[in-house]
Length: 505
Image (cartoon, rainbow, N blue to C red; front, side):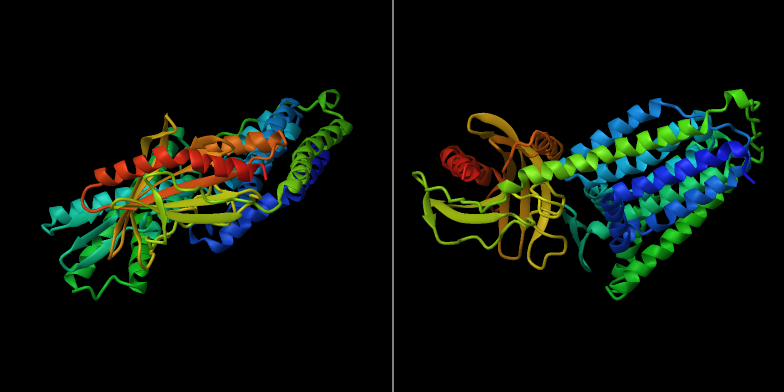
């Protein structure tokens, strides 16, 4: 049975935590939705029960401690709430999720004090694995997997022709797609590795060493997995390791890798037990009064409530800016002439208020212009979104060979844009794209989100658009780059005028 000094603090903690779930229910539900639809983050359903169980295991040690509120936690709650509001304004869901998860240990620190929170630091830190984060690693991991697989094939004496994450060997064509990046193996390995290290080791050095193993081991193992799948298919005449068995082999191999990693970790196991430090002697005069816990709990709930209310207020102020967008295409400027559609590709953007396209010709050069205009942005229909791409994965026609930042001249200013190469059976295209945010140009997603958040927090309507230009190329991209640069030099003022007119309409 819990000591009497714990009863009111425990009730206060439960009330505050339940209040956090209620106040930020949309953010918590967004995590649940991702757990439900994504195999990569399905483990999120287990994180909260595991954390609660780990805290429950510490109940005897916790009972020896005296809870004492720490008022500094309230200031950190303010900072987390402001960060949540800014990420909400910029529609950066993962930062919102990280903030609300961080509010849980900070609230407990505020109510119970540092000595108590320190005792359950790992269970509270383990909660961050509930946040579905890591997709930004997919492009880099895809490239690494392709590099590793191609190198191993070459070492095996198999000739390989590669473009981006696509490669061909004599027996067939292959590509490293998102599912082959190894992200789900990496996240599962880190989650299990941290839990295993906490439960198995007592030495902090051994724990960190095993966590590092859990980070690097699955990355190399995924490269080996991809190589073995290609080799099995190659040696079987493209009969095995394709379709469903491709994934079966992958998960079986991952299971073996995890068993191997835990077996290696078993040699580091230490058996010394952590001695429980007794709590400070309890003196009735020193115990915080019950009303102090109540006041701290009310203050924490009040601070947490400010930010969603402010977000609703901002949204209502900007509701008036949701009218139709009047966007016209720019008139051609000599030597460019507008011509009927001559290009068969379109960029893949989600939910623009208006999407316009036009095609221009000067001599033998054909340029496609796409304007994707956003005014009433919301989750799933926003300019800066990882789902806005040149072409989806496994597109039946188009393959994105690569997309890299390059410096180009936009209206006399050197600006970084994204340059992508597209391949299809009939043509190859070179694409430049960047974002227009109320007159400012950027292709940097982080800077763009900050500009959007600043405008929304100030209550300033800020329309935005993606500008995409494309032309065909053959073997060399240099002539295509010159064609795009010439087009931008001559047509950009007209494009800017149309965007400015739409923003003021």
